[in-house]
Image (cartoon, rainbow, N blue to C red; front, side, top):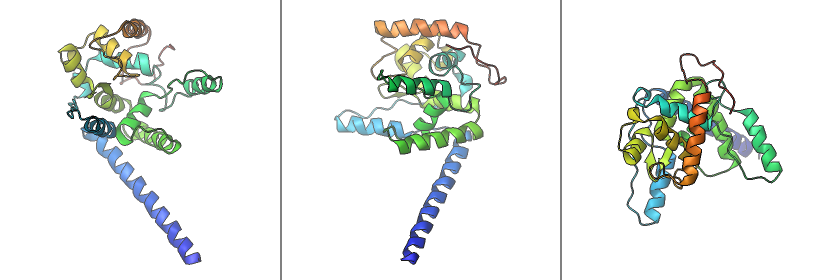
Length: 239
């Protein structure tokens, strides 16, 4: 009996060690290598196949230097205005979300850009406590290994921005007929406004609701400090 127990313990130990080494390997790899394909892209491809649609995933990696600073400012303003100063988690927003849930209010997201990036690049999107734990683990890793600038670069290349559309270059071309470096403030704000549900909210054909969110994000963009990765300790103004 003891021998079997020891074998099980060794097997679990070796499994955890293997997972840890592989996770470190891919985090280090993606610090330098573009992320060309993500688990969410695979999920969307499978969904398209199941619904007998043509598999269409639009995505082209683009360096952050070739993406409009307006888009960086817009996603920070709308998704995570403490991005430059937190350690991967916005505990104040997490607590607000917890209190809202306890009161029976509509569930709201409290994930930072770092958490969203960790989930998009390394994990599948199904909800579970295990996935949330892994998301926390990968968030800590990328904050430590990648740094803010690389996290933003990967985020703007991997985030879903429309039906089968991933990343700044694909959405700039599909919805605005331009390149990501030419995105204007209104266009950037529209893209950011669509991110909570990019398959329902089309930034290229905005609804009245999306235009309302665009106006709010544009206003927020003017109130927070410009995103400067060379000065990461600047505190952003609260929303």
